[in-house]
Image 1 (cartoon, rainbow, N blue to C red):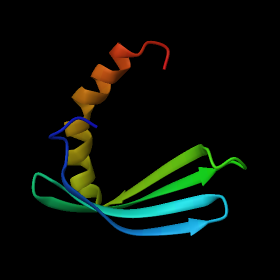
Image 2 (image 1 turned 90 degrees about the horizontal axis):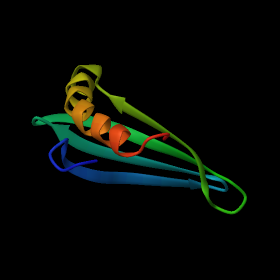
Image 3 (image 1 turned 60 degrees about the vertical axis):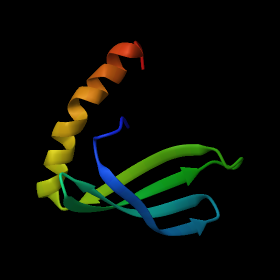
Image 4 (image 1 turned 180 degrees about the vertical axis):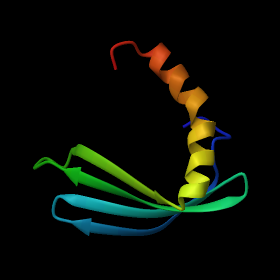
Length: 82
């Protein structure tokens, strides 16, 4: 994600399963704290097959979504068919 969308990202924990990983993180958007977890499913070769991201609280996620709208739109226009 382009610089300036969020601040101070920190990984606070990581869990490992046979074919999965969970990475807990914290970051800030306009000074407001957000907590999240990336849940990653792996295939038999250890390659990523699925990623789910969960974040809270909703109030600050809307601010994050608004800040990401422009950069995401730019990526979509730069990569047709993705």
